[in-house]
Image 1: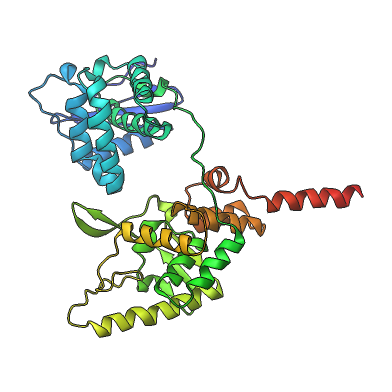
Image 2: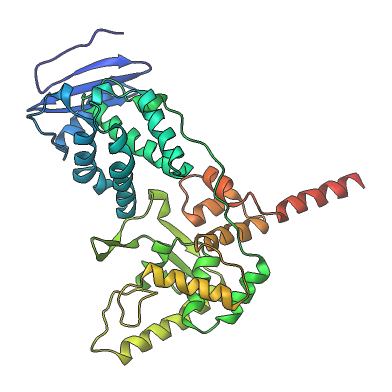
Length: 375
């Protein structure tokens, strides 16, 4: 390894690490680390991180080499990481930390954590009946947390890098058939659920995105909606929050029928507001409760299940409506990249892996093309 070029406290030092450069700066008890392809970029990133003054401040009375995973993980999660993730994700991570990670390996000092210990934790979770997804989330949480511990120089190397991600079958997602979609839309035409079903089945919005949709996000003249926020209940209070990823922010072009359903829905919501003008709570929501306040996700889910039952359709997760939108587009030979943009996925690979594996129409079309070629 190239010799480290150390400077006085506050200026830090930079050294070659593989094909990249790593800069470490210590100032007033704070340590920041940054890696980049060039030495100059590494220094710039480190100085920027230092200027942000990291929220995490581990108890200085605990010697660094004695700091345990439990002491580091919860403080980092509560004081820093929860501000970078959705509230629902934070609650899930904290549950994994308190019920699985800390009871199993929380007493180990950070410097004593090894890939073997983390692998044993995941194995124990599997034996306790935790699914593959929960194991993957636990590994992801530890990966980010210990990556930050490495950046802060609490450990030399993140041990999660050498731990394989648990593998397992994808959870079955079953889209609705075209005739089932038509049946639902025809049955609920002109009702409160009409526009909601259009947004779910044809636009593919996530539940939080749909319940957080505001009238200001809809361009009736252009026939589009801007998906910019979602709504979540945080500490018992509904709040508009950012979306899952940067690419989740997107423009969705509406079908003529969906646009018409939204126009009629707008008239319905306006009539509610005029009828109960004194008690109406204006949130500008497209799908509010009858008093204007945010609609409960549970109520939204229950109405979805009732609609399926009334139309003689087998129960489905609400997320299967999103899957339906993807497979309907795919069946009409819409490209994967376009579908990915419409759904707000971070990459087209996710779209292909999760949503279109069960669509038969393009495969049948390919077979018919081969038949024509050979006959």
